[in-house]
Length: 194
Image (cartoon, rainbow, N blue to C red; front, top):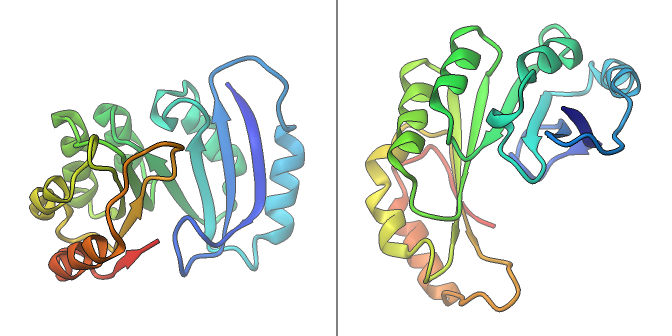
């Protein structure tokens, strides 16, 4: 495991929160020095709402040792945000149960598998705040899929609806995304189009 990238400020991933972002990877390539990242976060701890941990080319829940990295980098009283596709519910259950995860930010670009839906249930049942970002694309995650996810998203602090930015991807019209957002109001505390 290595820290692949670090951003001192991230106000985009979860609007309304001022976060530092730590990207972790499972490969052994060059990375950012853990001590330098910890020093930077500690220097900013009075202005930060928390630290966002995300995977680089793999989901963060697949990174062995993520518990240790959170413990090393997280200052007291800072929130820990885990960005994940939820593919490893047992790891998420450990993080939530041990108090390592304060907020889980789920990102789906396909209809979630059962294990991913289980992860959302773990967050909700563990009284862990959660947000959901859906990346819509007619051939991968449809408007109908997102509507079907409504019961699973219920209770989320935020639902973000994005159109795919992949080159050559089919796109929904802005009016279709706006209609979807209106239909999803009430499933999450806040619904945004990003």
